[in-house]
Image 1 (cartoon, rainbow, N blue to C red):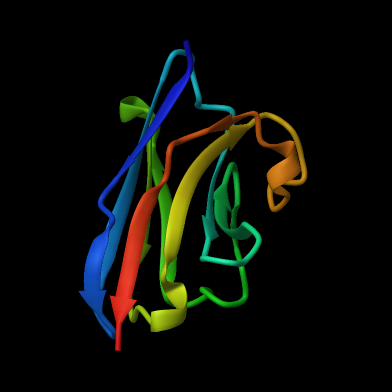
Image 2: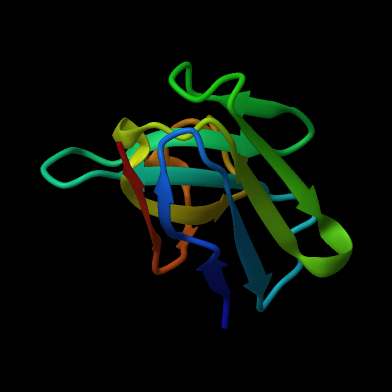
Length: 120
């Protein structure tokens, strides 16, 4: 049974940092693309970042967020710096063996989400 479990969300002031983690289990994810998506209230889910052999970022987070992975731990991370109130959302981890990695429609497995709230 495949599971993705996010952690690390919370409440932070603008300009602060958080690190999200996503622990995967149930199969080997070394060759999978791991992605982070987010959904703010009243908005559609949007791509944030992804990693396979390369890394991909949404323009809105480029230069502030860093995605990385530890294949030995089957874990992917999202380091979020210089957070802004507009980063407030539920953040989801996802996995896919398909492309393109920026499309949520290509992802097969999803975590339950973790709330990130950035106050001004």
